[in-house]
Image (cartoon, rainbow, N blue to C red; front, top):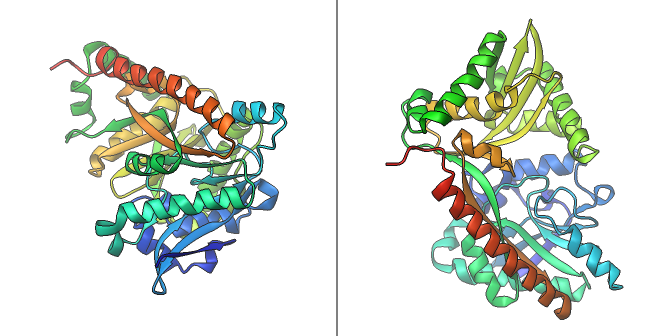
Length: 382
């Protein structure tokens, strides 16, 4: 019989047991990344992300883990429900706290019910359903307004909609490696107009005498991390008014995941003026943080997209994910893909209203993805 436990800190689950469930394909799901968030106090009671991980156990073996948090707000999720919270509270309800299954501050898709590989092949559906029922039970027992599983897989969505979760789809833009030999080979796959535009942008950066540095592992110095944190902080302050992560998080990341980091820096006249931080997965390069001390035309595209694509081709990486939003990525070779989230709403009347909204939203996003792929694709027609 499957039983469950809750954990207020990830250290109450051994790293070995967690990673038997998370695997090593996606560093964001790994023990070390979540540990860095906790240890640096980037998550916690004072940040409104209260760890409440779930482990599913059978015969004293952990068969699955779930990165669950009690949320006191809707910040750092990238699947926006602020309007839901406003309407719920306007009607006299209390939307917060809520439950959130996600990777904090990271719009990275993947499994959210992480199943021990020993059990995954034959019992995947059973375990996902059990985990979903545990989340529903905790929502109702502890009087949370709702539970949200963001950036989950489509497979998880199909299973959990059967037990009362609403399915929400979103849209991101990803680059896919079609066995390109080099960047020029990638360029030849684009339409003439898009190819000329990219060459123009890259030539501009070259003519500015910008030096590009790509660093991984031990090549990344403490000074590089100082710069990257300042870039992150600067961009975060402009976008959200405050930075979610602190300097200690970046320091811990450099110690725990240094071999999974690609840092792309731009130098002008010997000074580092901009940087982009990417996380290296087994098959995907994840673009995460970017910033600049100086506004240089096209530099964002060079560091975040073109250099990332070049590195992925050179290292036989199949995908580059550039994070949330960004229609501007399409003309640079990124195409739209569907993302999935699940939402359990305890109040039936409010659930019906959200469901109607999601049905309309899904139709719009489906049409948008199809339109971009069919009519706005940057690639040459075959």
